[in-house]
Length: 489
Ligand code: ARG
Image (cartoon, rainbow, N blue to C red):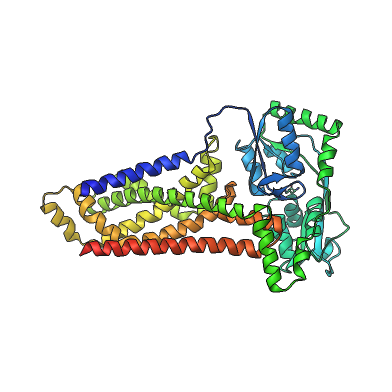
């Protein structure tokens, strides 16, 4: 019987690893490809239309790729991660309305610039703010890591930093902040789509946008620059820009004047049905489940090993070095935030490796969870009566055999509720995956929000889905617990 149980575990383990590795992108194909990164909450330069990233930047790089016969892959990530993605070679080119600055030139190379822009101030229509001076002491929103952020920080005051411009504008519209400093073209789009906002007729800074590429890639730089020049000369660039100049319909406007019921159904339609936006949530949901499931398995395996090593050391004094290593692992992993670990694994450890992001997330969350699982299981092992080990040994079983077939099963049963809790925490922690441009459930909601400027329904929907998953998971664990209890008798 115990043989069979052992085998079942082995099969499950192998199957999970097979699943884990099949989830890596197939990167064996060797066609020339260009990976572009952007932060797609910046209309008209980059934004989502249905499931596709479009906009002036996106179309321009598409055209560059087409003219040079290269496959293009566009990846969306937080704006403040873009320069790092280029520096570490995670992507070839960044086109994201990036302003040319001396500081950035130290990190990356810029192509020739293709747009002029300004930093402008957005306020509510009834605002008394009329320029930079009047902003002192007020709550000012910016997008984190942008030149607007730098400008406000050095010249005015400490701003409120938002993950994207749309979020900052939404906060302004609802009165949580007093002004937003943003690039002129996106500011115009945001104001067109929201009610009750205006742009002040002053420019805080004049800037130029260019694409960013990694240093020391002269062929790539030349290819892009040559194509940009050609596109400028034959009018392609102007055509692309003109395509995105049309006025936006005020979604919010249409919705506001209605009663609650009508507002809700309109909002539901816009946030989920229009352009098949529900697909962001569904695809994101599967990514979240895949990452959580594999990470839980990985965490369990690591946790079991570490717990056994640590308690063996505690009880017998064996495995000194291994115990020491486990100790370091626990200290480091439990002493640092999981987002930071995720970023380090992605940008530092796997910097030079072309590896699927899902796999990176699984590894990061698996390693993180392992540390907590280890301590949970160790406390379970310690809670098993010492007499059990002695009994096992006096029956002639070895230390390892007693551990495996007497101690661990009991320990596991004891800690099941705590383990369940850890899985639930892990599932929710994966919501930071958006930092490495993974489109998990949370990011799916973010994308909808950035398109519809409506925070309410997308966030509620995302919360609801997590809640449902957690409730199902708890139910499952409860069943398992009662089953194990029954076996006891
Ligand atoms: N031009 C500004 C900068 O370079 C803001 C760019 C933000 N771009 C974006 N895709 N969100 O800092």
